[in-house]
Image (cartoon, rainbow, N blue to C red; front, top):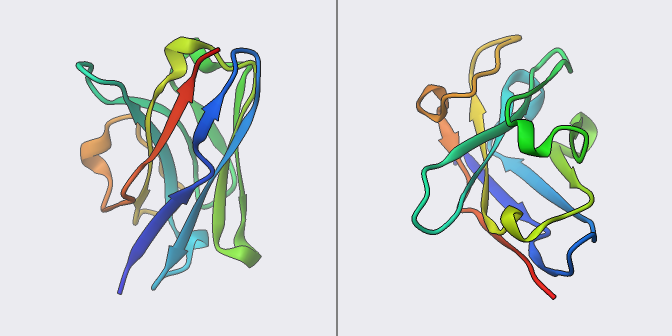
Length: 125
């Protein structure tokens, strides 16, 4: 059974850091592009970044550039999103998604084949 599970969310103070994990089961993440998305209440889903099967990374959202970094550990079948200098406006449910195309990444979530259930990130003092 193909499954993606996010973890690592929680409550953090402004300026703090979190590392989200996206663990896969039922398939090898190394063969997929993995994207990170978020959705805040009342807002549309945003594509943040993606790491391709080649290891190349793409950053789509200007507001997180320089603060969020995506990486992967194929041995652990896990992709990470390191989030630094967090701001209240980063509060959202964060999702990872997998696209079954070699070397490809997309900002558009409709291109992705599998989704995790999401993890809540709340940035507040």
